[in-house]
Length: 561
Image 1 (tube, rainbow, N blue to C red):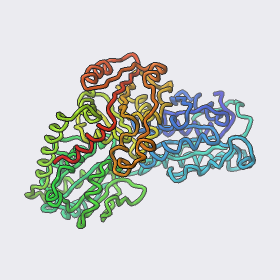
Image 2: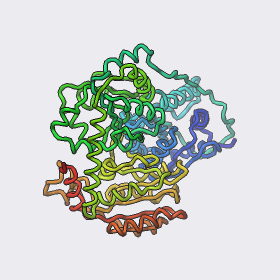
Image 3: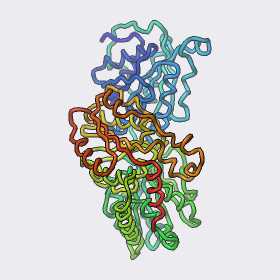
Image 4: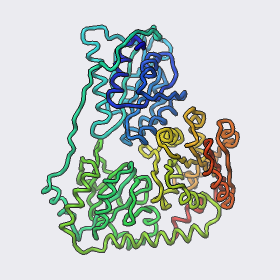
């Protein structure tokens, strides 16, 4: 095939295809022209072009989250690479395999006042599993071999054990547009076998015996991709009388036995119930927890063991009580634990008491919502139960993820949020990337401040009728009007909440979105139906809510008993 004459770029293209990487997100540039040529001329690679590198990286993140497969990112030299940092950090803490590929100048030109030259080779070092630097020339005795070995190594590392991003920095010398004949699919491919790990049956039973009734066991799961095996294991554990299972909205785990309204339930507990329901052992799985209530409560306890299960990059001691780190996939360990605990099943009312307090919390929640005025919470209480069954939901950071935590999201097909780092910056682009992969509709619910952060997503050529957006327009950063660190400051409105200048109607019209807006519950009920029905264009629904009233409604919610 006729392609770039840069051997390193052609080896890279060969190995991306050989390692099963199907998608690449490219951003235009000059120095990365050989990489663009090498990748776009491979028919088996689906390439997408996104101009803004920060948006491109989050789009690739969304693609990888939705597909469960690595996605490649390609940028030019200079500060282009630094724009990847927020999404790469999110991918690292979320365990998502991104293949970051940056074009670079030959090393002798760094710090020589040549354009677009910075030290790139370790620019993302804290947030990638591994990085490598490919020299500009491979025409020395071991040049081709070392290039092949390094790329194979990083592509294996991205998906080995705990998945995560890797960085391949390729130095390229001029001329950049020269082409030559190259025989594709001939590069050496290194494979790896990683046997699945299970505990010996005797060890699983020994561990099970240590937490058998009458010991009280609380299992909490943070963000996680949908996992039917994990769901079944947790359901078996939740059926045990001494085990309660709490799941967050973005854990994507559902059972009538689960405590799936963590914040609503914990804020209703009396001091006596907090003491009586304190676990002897808490087991965590999945990613970082949204709920500050559960973190503060467990940190306040003086006598509790904490086990963390999962493939981790470090020892995670979020509650300051860690006693056991279990380096296994949660679906495997918890399945074995559920089986082991069956033989130790004994009388306990621990799980039943948790379900009783959650039932009371749900009843109190429903009464409060019915009586509350038009606000963010009133809007969410209508939107969440009316999301169509096959739609995937993405939530921005700030108040949208926190409101969703209070609602019953058990019927939502899949729910995601960038909670690896919990940044506000790329929520729209992440949802857009997921919508490219998912065959049905992807709905993003975002705030007006989060939306303003990531307007580049709406200009992307990847936007399609499968992408729908609800913007909660509550006068800027609504979260700052609620959290204690900022809500009482005199600088609140000027420096934190900061009302946005966001002409959503004009933005929607300019980028080809069908536009709807609502200013009260009746308007939301009417407009939401039309918003859902749009199938020939992407759609945006702006929901306008009162800023101060919304914050007060949320504050009062947590004060109710």
